[in-house]
Length: 128
Image 1 (cartoon, rainbow, N blue to C red):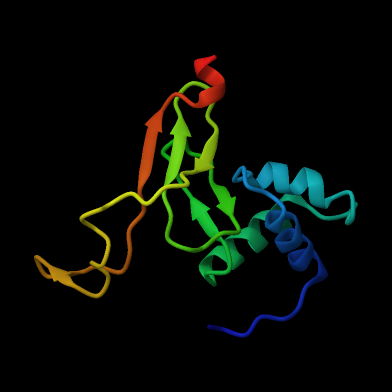
Image 2: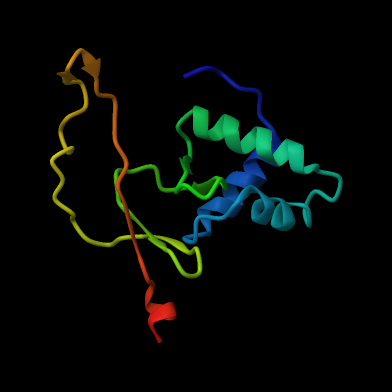
């Protein structure tokens, strides 16, 4: 992993993400971190989120709506995406997957490095 210079702003972004389970967007991170760093720019937040994701310290979640979300939890787990309200949440269950254990295997000449699993539907709030 490349060595990166310490940044108080980056640390504040990590601290914020550590407290969240709702997979916030960069805009939400920006709105919350700027209270501690009033002069931080949205671009700085984006750059730091992308750097942290590239370093594997956080996960970047892309569910097909064009908006990146970020997750402090980098362990292998599944997500549920509500098609009605757009919420993204962790699924707290072991979901058997044919893809589990495929990392490092070669299939059709392609090296498998990882996978993600998203489930879509209506969340419990939208079902009420």
